[in-house]
Length: 111
Length: 113
View (tube, chains in turn brown, yellow):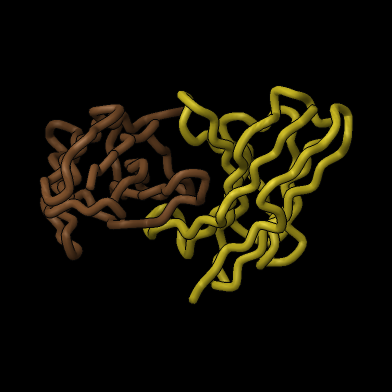
């Protein structure tokens, strides 16, 4: 069952601009993760934020988590053409083995 | 570099055939997963395994089975392939439940004709 819902479904920006993607979910979570998928390939783990954290950074990525609103955002700063991909959020429940993925945001960065 | 390897990138099979998709990881991970990915539907969990010889159904197990005889290998079996099983199949593994990131394979694009 899908829990995460990304917004927008598609996003097109110019190189150098910032890209923001949002994720909303429905039930309580232990952690929330973001993944990237280049066309036709497997997913790559980008960053994990735990339910007791509010913000996390990794290079040009910044993730925020608001558990009261059951939402997260992924910010990619100074985007590059190589950032063109689909981005998925995934939620993990306490004690759960499995992640539940959203349907993704398709990001296009125009050179 | 740690890896999850799926045996085939592209596969074409005929309706009714028994199909085996193989996945091997070299990270000594306990947990392994099979997802299918379809446009507009996202990733849907088929089966997962949290230990050797252990398996659990995911959201869409019908028409599939799995085998995990060794820790590093998790196989997905389509008992009698049908055209509605044409999809991208993704294998993943993780160290400890859902508290760590998944490592995915490159995917197998299966076409059933």
